[in-house]
Image 1: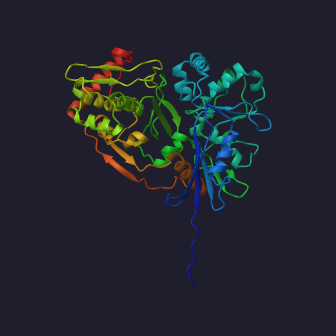
Image 2: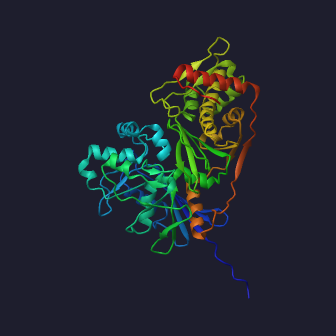
Length: 476
């Protein structure tokens, strides 16, 4: 008799991001992607959350979970305010992370307790992204709607709730709860005094599950995991290990890692989120990345490939030409109304090649500043794993490897948030002590070099931050 072959187990990971819903179905043992789908979300910074469910159905082929799947997990954009009434219907469109109308409320919350209290007691210092500020805005501007709010969720919580056929109790995980502003990372508990001050009362909130804990099952018996925030999901999908830091380089940049190191930054430069493995996810946002390269290429009337060739023909230090790339304000350091600065202009340095080189240096230095903040809080940075469109630039990678005091690794492009959600689903399915080990496919590696000119460039950049922008103590 032929030996019976056990059906391979499949898990699905969902990424409900700002722009779209992406779905990956993955082999639970190997992490190999079996199939994928995607569907767009409505544009704008406030969205009816029911449209996310519609997008999930479209991306999954009409059913929220395929018939052959054993477990499903949802990763999603953080911070979005999903405020529901007694019947589970939205009282207002969900305000997304990039909706800044609650900036005044964020300032009021920061002032009320002070940055040190927020960093030490909550783990994050409020900005307009965070859910607590959005609830405060709703109470201030639409008190009649705020009075109807019975429950508050985050985007990934909402889809998990719908997958479980809207049970009485909603659930979440620590990584997403840590972005609300009313859940304490150090205490791993909600802080009702924040909600009382921001919203006037505490609505019903999701129960926070442990990372490997299952939320329940769908009506069809599919295990549903706790889910996670998007950056925590990406860290899980990448399989980040201690000493590895992810740097996502797009129009803006994000620097984060999964670590056991406690991080409390009263300045708010580092958001001390939780990760999806029971540890911490310190995260830093940088506003000016690949757009700086695109703007410089347009100025020099070349494409990006031409910009790279120009930069490679210049001296490594751009002959002293230095660009501080705050072309659209900056988040780290927190200078929302700043503009960029070009320094070291001489007859010999002011060439197209040096300007191109200065643009690549500027992006790498801005991200190096973020990495230095992590190091300043005793977070090890031994290897940098780069993601996003900027990671496709060989010139930028070589520049970064010379400045970042670390080797640079480029994994194969993938939907890492959805992959992380799938890995968490496989973890919940097995109930093991650790998530399954899936290989990370590496496309390129660049060894960190730290050549002689790098220290001088870092020093001039730190000096410019202090002298021009008043950013004291910038070290690299």
